[in-house]
Length: 289
Picture (cartoon, rainbow, N blue to C red):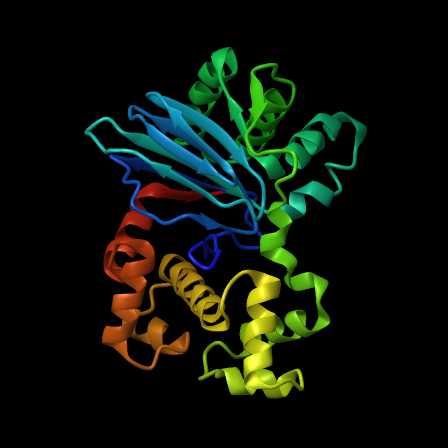
């Protein structure tokens, strides 16, 4: 479990969704999960797809919808024509005003099913691929209509199949909210990540010994405390690299990294890119709506 990384997506509260269009996409990221929904279109490569407890081969193309908290990874070679289009949108959509209307019921049911991962094929794949191509270059109000149109088409499709087993529970990775102590630690990290945080600090916060806190935190979240803290900091750095023009050093120090060379090493381990490469890549591939 500890080898599964938690990713912080670049979504902000006023974003409906973000679209990333990666040409000559590389599949060098680790198994990871995040708190948002994700629709992935993979083109012109073949390999292996990992979603929860599902491990399958795919041939040349793939289209998968992932729910929040669901670990995933694609393993495949890259060639000149390899392309990945990814849409990420917030988990708040599920209980939004719009989704609670009768006309959107199919979409809400789709989002509920996506917690097990859904792969689409046949005509649904072909029509969705074309819609994603159009959306990747679109701007303005109609992008919202196109986005919901894609979700509705996927919702009513007969060409869909669940990926994980019926007993698989992705919510085990996000059990922080099930414990007031864990919630208190996570909130403390969110409010103080820019400063030095030690296990002793959070142990004192929840009135437990350091060893008991370490064991308790890993058991409830699936990750060691230091891994969770680093995940959160790297995710925050990644968002700031995209959302601001601040220098890399300034961002690193403001997110709690006291040593710049150590930060660069950790960031490259997580992202397989330097911070500068990540920022440049995001500018070239990401559109926000």
